[in-house]
Image (cartoon, rainbow, N blue to C red; front, side, top):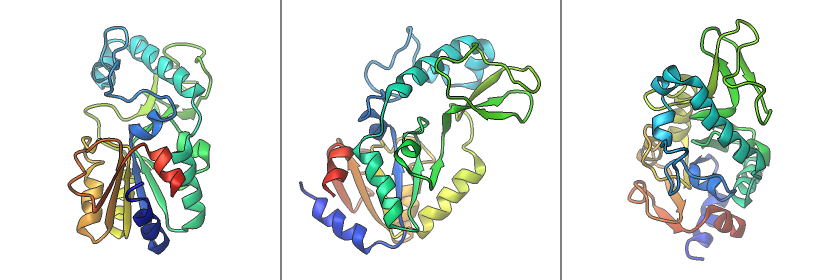
Length: 238
């Protein structure tokens, strides 16, 4: 496959590789993409539910959608792309994985140096107190779930439209982009900011940017090497 040999060479040479992953990686494990075809649920678009305003109006409805997503994710397994990135972490002591995905499949595959830009669907946080918990139950005992500390409604610990990314997580990601010598962009449309700006920042600071995606994206023009195809197939060849 065109580009695989070049990527192998770049990976062998790299001392500070980073990877940014998006919904395309999870889609290969059977998790529908956020904006993909058939993205409607009960006549609602995800963009209409993943907002603080929607949660304030109807927390039970929003939680029903997240419960539906949790059920799908619970059936999913890491694919070859997830496995490759976990192995790369073992080979490269300064490798870091930055993900826009909230499903936890990278950790299931064995990755530990993971920065979750958009949070994690398996974690809940209280809307009234600092309580923050992991809850892997499918389905949850009650919808909406209540805080065990104060009794208030809990929400998914994910980033919604109109909300800022976790400050410390993005700051660390930005620093890693600036110090990268190789920056992999895998399975992302490059349309979501500020995540997409990480690839541009890496390029500005001298990193070689490699894109792996079935189709051209908003970051294809930034990439020094663009490999067309599904990440699991390409990375398993690498």
